[in-house]
Amino acid sequence: MVRFLQVSDIHGSLEMAVKAGRLASSGFDAVLVVGDITHFGNPAQAENILKNMASGRVPVYFVAGNCDPEILLTWQPGDSIVNIHRKNARAGGVELLGLGGGNISPFNTLIEFTEEQFREMLEGLRPSGSRFILVSHTPPYGVDADFGRRGHLGSRAIREFVEKFSPLAVCCGHIHEARSISTIGSTKVVNAGPAKDGYCASITVEGESVEASLLRL
Image 1 (cartoon, rainbow, N blue to C red):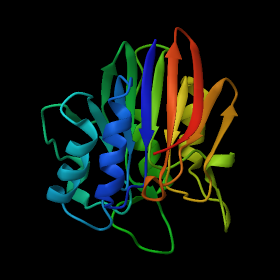
Image 2 (tube, rainbow, N blue to C red):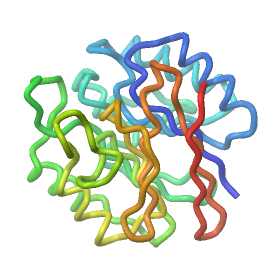
Image 3 (tube, rainbow, N blue to C red):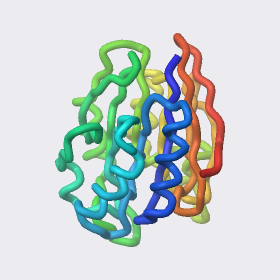
Image 4 (tube, one colour):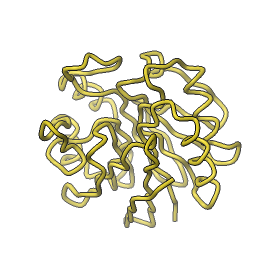
């Protein structure tokens, strides 16, 4: 059994990063940080936030969000903090596939991708087996996790990937008001809600079974 703490949309809140680190050390095997670590900040701010979540004991796997600086797509702080954007990693026997950035929006934020760019990046993210989690800042299109004030705001390319490969779960964020657990086929889609407001989620994987719960920091 592997327990992940899912945290997203911290937007520079050191207070919530500290709380997440404390919660992570209470029995979680790893932290999945699903973007918007900073609020238009810099790598030094991101590193401080991520180190507080790692607390020296629990590894942190992260992708950048649309409000993070572009350098966070390739930045590797090292130690127990691992950037998985466009990469595969393993945590407790579960494969993690990472996809950072937001989709095109009216707000012209720092990291935004077209559907074609998402599709191209996902082409290079092939899972080695069926036991994997997609860690994506942007949610797939047409589920509770992407439903905001302007309707469904997620990515069709990400949805296509989920329908094709059926990950155990999609850990996403980005749409603050869409805190939810829903499904696409057998895949659980979890938007933990913005950590800056004290929200998070737990993902427990045991064999091919996945349990998800929405929590508070």
